[in-house]
Length: 336
View 1 (cartoon, helix red, strand yellow):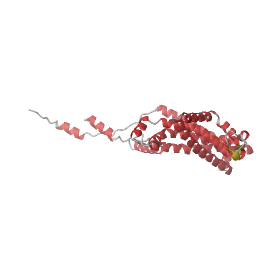
View 2 (cartoon, one colour):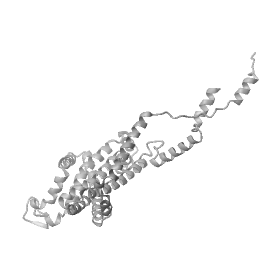
View 3 (tube, helix red, strand yellow):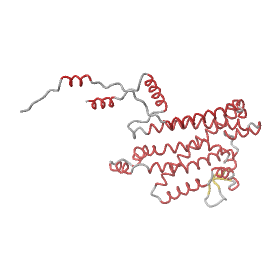
View 4 (cartoon, one colour):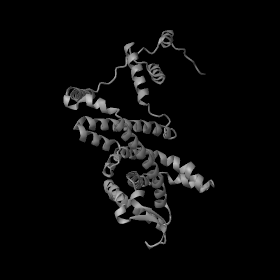
C-alpha cells in the first residue's frame, strides 16, 4: 500500500509566491586598469599639449603644404607605385610559392634561390642596381643566346629603364620574395586531411586548390599580406634614391628650398598615417569576413563595442544591469 502525502499549505504558498528578486550587479573593480588608464591619458594629454603649444611645429606651414599641388602629385605617385608593385609582387610571389611546393627539384631550387637573393640584398641597393643597369648592359634585346653580336630586337637600356621602371622592378621583385614565403606558409597551414578528403571525393586538382585549399589558406595569408602592403606604402619612400618624385622626395625638395624641415616632414608623416590607417581598417573587416566559417560568433567590431558600452551605462543608470534568462532560471531552481 502506497501513501501520498500532500505538502503543507504554508509551504506550497511560499513556493508559489517565491520570485527571483532583482539583483544589483556590481562589476568587479580592477584598480590597476584604472591606474594604467590614468597614466595613458596623462601621456596622451602631455603629447597633445606639446604638439599644439610648441611653436616650432609651425602648424600654419603644415596647413599651407598639406594640400599643396606638388605634395598631392607625390602622394598619387606613392599610391600608384604601391598598387602596381603590390599587384606584380603578389602574383609573382604566388607563382614562386607554387614552384617552391612543386615536386620538381629544378623549379623548387630556382624559387628558393630567387627568394634567398632578393631577401638578402637591401631594397635600396636593388634600386640603385636597376637604375644603373645601363653601365653593365648598354643595350637590351632579343637575339642569339650567349652572344652580343646579333640582336633581333634591341633597346637602349638607359631609355628603357627609366626611374619609374627601375622603381617598379625593385619594389616588385623585393615584394615577390617576401610574398612567396607568406603564401607558401598559408598553403602549408591547411590541414592535410582536407586535401585527402577532396581527393577521395574525386574533385579535380585545380578545383580542389581554388575551392578547398585557397579559401582556408587565405585566413593565414591575409594578415601578413596586409602587413606587407602597409610596409610597401612606407617603403616607397626609398625610391627617392632614383630621383622619383614620390611623396617623401617631393617633401625633401620643398624643405630644401624653404628650410621648413619639421612641418614638411610632418605633412609626409600624416599622409602616410592616413593611408596605413585605411589599409588597417580594410584588413580588419576582410579578416572578419574570412573568419565567418571558423567561429560561431564573431567578436564585436569597435562600433558594436561602443554601442554595447553605451547601453550598459544607461542600464546601470536605471538601477542595475538585467540578468540573462539562464542566470534567472538558475537562481529560481536553487531557491526551490
